[in-house]
Amino acid sequence: MEKTVVMIKPDGIQKRLVGETIKRIENEGLMISSLNIIKLTEEQVSELYKESLKKFPQIKKEIIDYMTKEPSILMIIEGENAIQKMRKIRGLSNPSKSPVGSVRRDFAGDQDMEELTKNGKVTKNIMHASGSKEEVEFEIKLFFGEKYEI
Image (cartoon, rainbow, N blue to C red; front, top):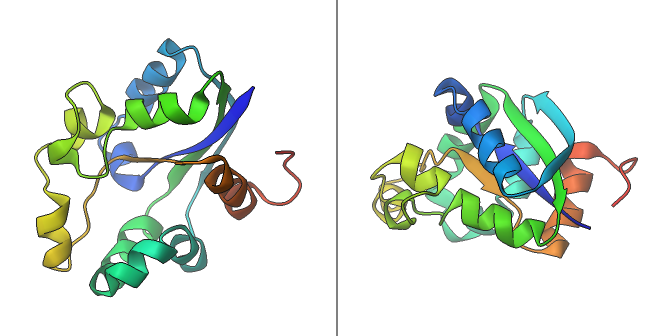
């Protein structure tokens, strides 16, 4: 059984998309094995987006503000091909290029990530999903602690 980490970001909660997101997860045959509602710390956000912030340092303040001001929902999702299925549900990083039917395309709209980033702005794209087994292990430790069995 594969695990992945999924986060409904503050804008997803503000737009009242929690139920819809969970429905899409469960409709794919995936199971939520852990769920926490937390306000992320600046350190957690900096670690999660470390590589992006190296490439785009101009967004650091805005992404930290966006991700730490309001709570996020963090989930560990389990199921067959959970990582791949969640990435499909989530859509591409850039909402404007995500396929119709993905959470990001359906609810984050026509935001163009490249244009926003170039201008020092952050794409508010509803959710995050781990991209690899290595990311899953890192993110479970980052958000759920060492006590959680991977």
